[in-house]
Amino acid sequence: MKDDDFKTYYTEQRELLREAFSEIGQKTELILTVGQLLMENGADTAQTVRDMQRVAAYMGIPAEKFHLHIMFTTLMLNISDEHHSHTSFRKCPKRAVNMQIISSISRLTWRALREHYTLDEFKGELEAISKRPRYPHWLSILAAGSGCGSFCTLFGCDFNAAIYTAISAIIGKIVQMQCVERFGFNPYVSMTFAAFVALSVADLMHYLPTATPWHPMIAASLFLVPGIPIINAFSDMLNTYLISGAARILHTLIIVGATSFGIVLAIAMSDFNVFEGLPTLPESNYLLFAAAGAIGAASFAVFFNLPKRVLIAAALGGAICVCTRNFLTFELGMSSAVGTLAGATLVSVLAVKAIHWLHTPSLVLVVPAVIPLVPGVMIYYSLFAAINIHLLSPENLVEAIQISVNALLIILAIAIGASMPTIFASRSFQRKSKEKQEKLLNEIYETRD
Image 1 (cartoon, rainbow, N blue to C red):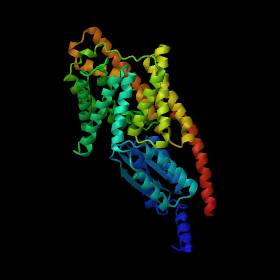
Image 2 (cartoon, rainbow, N blue to C red; image 1 turned 120 degrees about the vertical axis):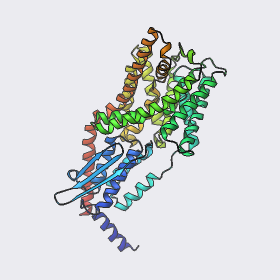
Image 3 (cartoon, rainbow, N blue to C red; image 1 turned 180 degrees about the vertical axis):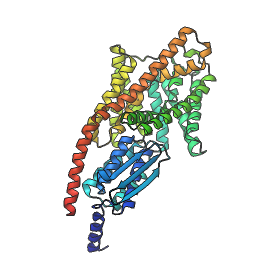
Image 4 (cartoon, rainbow, N blue to C red; image 1 turned 45 degrees about the vertical axis):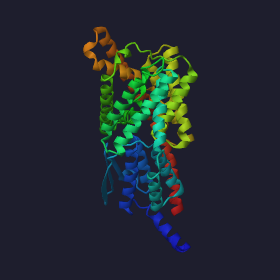
């Protein structure tokens, strides 16, 4: 293309962004593609709305003409004024977690404003983001092992038991991948098989040399923890996206139910009476706590496909979470729920501060960091009590109820602590983002004029 022709083409493309309804079909398709990629890869509704609105602003669509309704599996977009109305829908059937896509789209929306992208340039960048490869399967499998092994360490196991836990989790993760990719099983069914196999292997491991033979049963299936769904569910509910939040809660409960079914089957086939009185308090070694928390967070960061540039930040967040929780619980005598809430809130506040340093949404940094706070021991005690409820004495039944309630409180503390700082800071973020967005838009219009 000659220079004059290119300049003419480029000018025409830039003019399309001046009028809201110029090439409205292409614009709405691109906006919906942004929303679909975010919804299908683990973004909460607030993040999805912000990025879609920013893309619309870049395309010359004023906020008063932009109308968006988001449900768990559907995006509904209408752009209208007194003379025009254009409505489009987009289904979002997939459910995965890919934090690299979330981070990359957020950066792209700002870059498009700053560098004055044409629609074709924006489309090309968006397609490139959607096709970026994940971490290789072998690394995800190893991450399952290292993550669960580090969690077992946090529960008080010895080194041998941590290795046995890692092996069990690796086998369980391989089973899950094979069920989905080779046999085409439903994802929930795949989780059931993975949990059953991981715990069955962990049950066999208790015959091997170790001072803590039953600890692998606690941690071997924790790679199936639905961290993203539950945190997004509470974030949506607290941001008043009630329908989407309720659907996410139901999705989380189905994951928990599918995983629990596999766990229950494995427990029922094992000699689990030795679980009674199982010691689960680790030694007060904060260097060990920090290392285990960092490894666990980094492992889940690989699961969630975090950008490589923020892996260290996620690992550091995991160490801070665990050490804060354990200090408040073990040294100051606070309840586990309070310690967990403090740890999750602290790392969430730090993530909010780090947004502008690392140029990535806070969700990307927070979720892997809080996963090591999951109360795996209490969950397993609760399941064991549910299976053997007919054998429990009144005292043991009361204890089981107390443990179950405490486990629920800790899970709520994780979700609330990870969500609340971002929600409280959202108004300030929105004001600053709006100012930055308006400044960039003014630069675009000045350039066009």
